[in-house]
Length: 88
Image: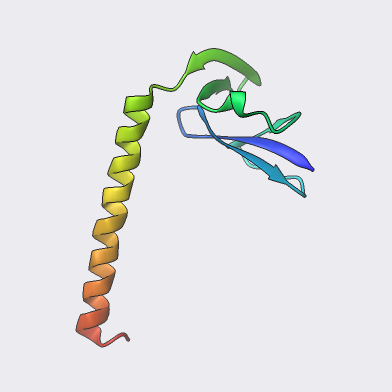
């Protein structure tokens, strides 16, 4: 198994994954084990160093709320368009 810390666009770990195959993506950082202590921690991806800097929880929660609201608006628009076009 391979373990990865997924980082957001600000460099903070937002998810830990256990995968069967290697993943090569800029936002997936290989780690040695399934270690949740990386969650919320910042990674300097240029130097591949974990910093003692952690995500601002209220700021991240606000961003997630904004994303959820945008998804809700898009879902409503898709539903309206489907009803107006008869599902075509």
